[in-house]
Length: 311
Length: 274
Image 1 (cartoon, each protein chain N blue to C red):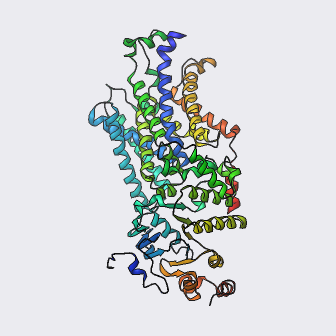
Image 2: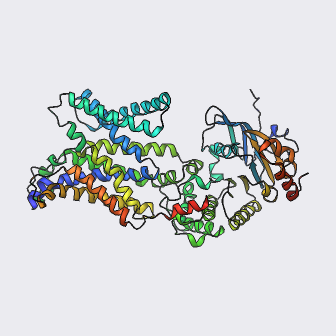
């Protein structure tokens, strides 16, 4: 198992874990701020942004893709405002229409352009290419100590590890501000804490996670990991600190079990072909959420009752 | 355009019966205008609240009471106007202010404990990464004790009743250890025991030389709780010591038809209105 595992499974699993955690961390705060929709928006809107950035620069690199995604986000905001005002349509519907239309437009552009010399196509946009991010030159666990072999690790691994570490570090540094601006924005502003900037920074962090993870794991996993691990984690605890730890656990478990089930699961049912690792990761995260909904220790919200009593 | 006055004090002379309030008033607002859309919610309001006393901001629903307080604090943007705290622009005096927002403005299902919420009152003092332990942890515990909530320190905030939630918010403001306490509807939807506990804490603050300004909606308690009153209905209607400004005429002017005559009679019996 050793050599083959290190060659074919270790790097995709690690990339999956880092991608899942990078998305789940900002997801915790987005959900508590009732902005889960924003994560959905980001994951949809990045596609046309990335495609256009790719068409303009001809390379797949993080910075141009991030700029493209940011540009697409600006276009999305303008379109949403325009639809809201000109059409007098309620904001949720306006958002839903804009995100999906932009995503669809991204798919169309992607289909029409010649991207034969690079790895970017519609399937890739949805499901990433986790299975191909293998460490071909590895010869077993001892390769982890061999600098020459380490140099041939897929680039995505280092990129996702760095993005994940940066988001984690930013979360730790700004922890108190994030917590107070999420719980009680008015009080945070009265204290002189830049609550709006914190909210904006959170969306930027989510966008960076989405763009970085997009290319490796695809938009399905990005959408799922923003929401499922934090939502499941919320049902496990009543402390924000513990919720974040649980969300990391669920994200990691979704990546590992998702990859393993995708690769080996079909064989257990005597099917021959492996299924999409990204699809399976997202599915597993959804299963965790269902399980916590059914059995999580804090699934009944005493708080809601207290609110009703007060009113 | 209104002429710019060199001191805040100068203009207060025109308030009938109000004493001249020095430029170092705990909270002074000049020309404050806030708008949520086309119509202003608060229009060109001047206000000044005296030191070492309890002031109430009263007015009908939608008259801009909370808006005035929130805009003064910068929680919602103001179209125009200046806000001074002890004579300084508010941005420089944030450490001297404690704030109790409306209880209903937050999600009480948020995953945190009572102690955590009270400690948020210390965030200015400890900064982003400062250690929150030892003496400061003791401060938070004392504040909980002062509102009678020490036994609830480790409860999840969603498990509290409305009155208990309000006490936790007050404890958080106490932890801010300020000179000016701004409260938005502190008695809304709380039980009688909590109302008593809150007013006791506030009166104690006053005795310690602190200043309290509260948005208040219950006219029947204005006289017994407060020294100073500010009546607002989008514009400033009246202002002054309760004895002088809390009159039937001023109330009628502020509340218009919305204040039933019977209610006024009741007030004049309870509170001795002339």
